Image (cartoon, rainbow, N blue to C red; front, side, top):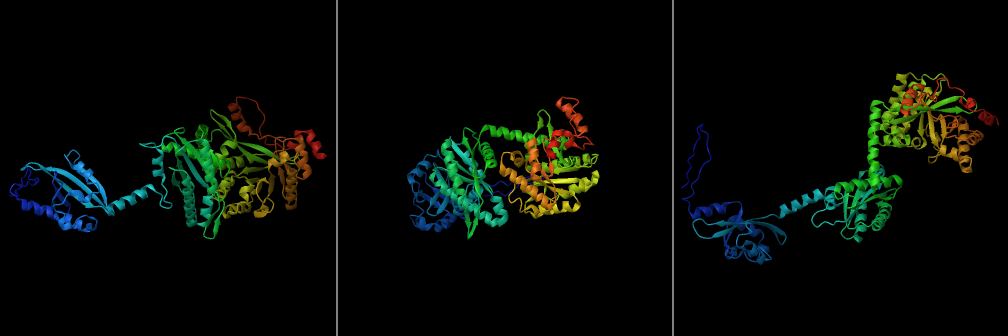
Length: 602
């Protein structure tokens, strides 16, 4: 009988009900098993004959009846072999009970069955029975496979994603010990995506994946992954440098061919590849991919379609760069070690200083003076250029206010600062705070940035001109279509790139560029500055060709203010250096050298 009596604890809380099944008969047990929503079979452990099948089992068997060697109504009394193509192996597992309980998933035609077998001892009789519970899990397996694919493959291309590709790189049981990893970046993809829309960019990525698959058919055991939007990777089962380089150059050539989407050709896309070798360059996937990325970035800085192998020096330089960026950020936050030097620009006809160019200088603790060529590019690649530009602008305007000769001050503005809706407000605020008249501020912008067709960049230039700020076109002659694009915005001054001035004495083509620029300035009625004038012969030549202003070490080196000179002398460990900007500095040209005066008079 079943005892439904419920016991209570001292507080009257109910405890679990205890049932007494001793009085139940076999028919009652059978009724319970028949009605369970679980497919159950009982199997003789000696003969493997099926001795019991519940209703759920019969229902499922009818669903796969076409796949069974027997009719469903004759299953009872047959052996469990009906589920297996290799019954001998299955009988071995079930014999003796050493391998039980046993769980397996088997394929039966197009269906997948989940089988679980346990050995149950009989209490009131000798021996035991095998109890099989099973289910049809075809849809579940398909769903699991789909989820696994989503988790390990890129949805757009079907290639392995970063997670799956990284697992292939990491050594495990049966993994290849020596492999090569090629990290591929598409140069120009962002431009294609921005100009043509996301659907075109995705179409391009699909074509890149197809080309990689085709190219890797010649490399057995290779694997391809898409790690980022325009970044792919290939794993090959070898690490010989020549072979890797040959394969990488082939990929560069294949991926660099024109792409067509419908009737539209997409030019300008090239591949840059960084290569690492395992175990030489590491064993973990994170380290190998990171080092391949370093090699790729170094290769990308050189030229399009480049291939680069990782070298430990690259990582050291990267760490040094990161430390340099961190120190520069600290310097901008505190103002420590940052100075502004000034180099005069002279009117060659009067010898007077017309403008002083503000040049940032940085003394890095424990390292000394750092070249602007080292830290300015880093600032341009990060958000630091905005802060560095603001520091120089404010300091230059403040210093210029105290110059007795009222010369203009020229401040270099990076192309990265234009078109971001922050430059013009910053200039307005600085002029307001310092009180410097707008006409005494000269903004220098490189020709490449000035010739941008970006509407926001041109808007900034027009607003600055409307404020009364003078605009100077720097590095003139180095950009494309220099002359035809000169009137893209109002220009108050042209500065000829120093490379033409340095070589104009020996190379007639450089002298021709200088003359052409001087003629344009004359026709437009604006000054033309010759940069990097370092010898008397160069000075004579630029005057002869018609340049109206000169700048360079022959005239004066960049100098700090008298106030900063005190600090700089301490940093340099020297005293009494009088090489600083004087507030009443006027006749630099004529007072600098009597011989230059004679040169000019000739």
